[in-house]
Image (cartoon, rainbow, N blue to C red):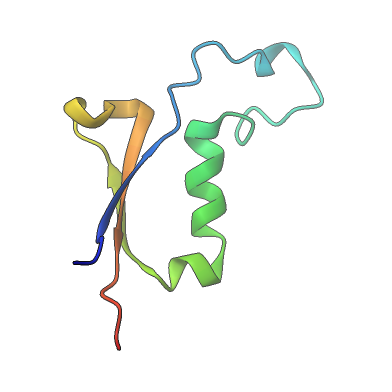
Length: 74
């Protein structure tokens, strides 16, 4: 049996000190934003992903997201 859904837990970034550091990007310094951005901008990773969407409350809500993988063609 193959895996087709991953839950990526990033946390909500509530304890981030990024706003206090002028040398860190506010947009990409928090995992909640930087992980999906990294995945979206990586062509190799995106070629394996069918869909990326927000997680349900029971799986982490706004501190997590789902990656639905494409079926492996053998």
